[in-house]
Image (cartoon, rainbow, N blue to C red; front, side, top):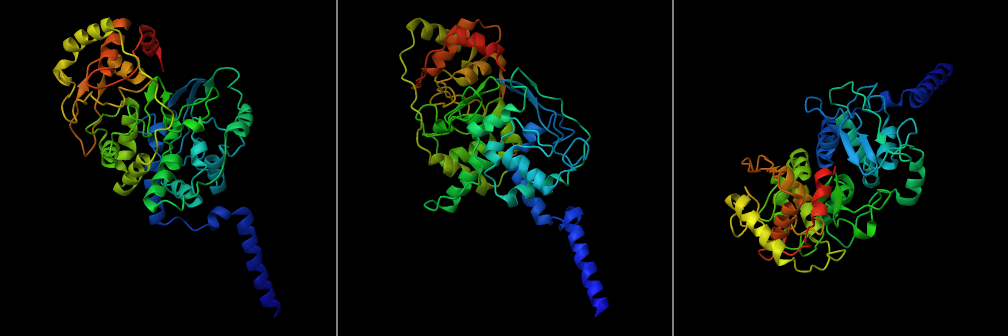
Length: 408
């Protein structure tokens, strides 16, 4: 009897010690299925686009991300114990994604989209962690943030969170089907589409009443994803949206420079079912914030814009703007062109563009840059293509072009 008590006590002590001092060692290793699911979730979350500065060191962080408040640098997600997340516990990882707080209590800036990731379910977060733990560890410490005063004081994030951050897992809408709810989960949580496509207030927080109605990102305008007629997705079918996400192009438009990175690293690698779910959810969104009323551009600006277009653009885009199917994007009805904010159009004219290539669309077209055009010439040709062939958008000024030249 005494031996039995000693044995039972030893087992109990071992369990208690295990829980107190070695919880990670006592936790069952993730299965191959969990790791595979974590990889798919990591792809859908587009972690690689922000957390890879050197393609030879995926997920090792250090990538510069410019914001209106200065620059931040992405964290190392590899399991390196000194500079990555190799020393983190499951609870550390959950706290980072759900609350925006590091293991040492430091608050993250919302360039890390924890306001979206807080909506993820626990199993998905831990599956992502399980996949990241299989990566090769890379010793790479990200540079410190380079933010202007007073944004450089992380303690201010406590006030930001109190004002603008709402934690909590996204709850399914029981009045909708499984596909719609999956699409909503991807758009609002895992894929964090609002991080780029929802306008921000003066403090960098989402304007929730204008969700997915377009926003400035690193000098470009991320277009509307709602049902707006001109600058949104009203004329796109769910199949059009799915084709765009999987190939970076469709019969309406091509992905711009920033979205091309998302297509290559994320949406082109997602499952057909998840891409379809995103498309179904986006097509269900109403128009949201009204589009601005457009007054006719001046005849002189339209005439000069047409002259420039005929000299520089016709060879690829044709006189009628039709372009070449899925090589040179069509201009009539193009939602990017008709965005209220012309920033992306101006940057593409000034900087040129390269069509993204994916396994589904391996052929690429390119557009030369036209930096030698004057600000007024760029404004005129942009105004012309934004208001021809049935398009309708506000005229562009030379001042807007000057701003676009130096935007980040």
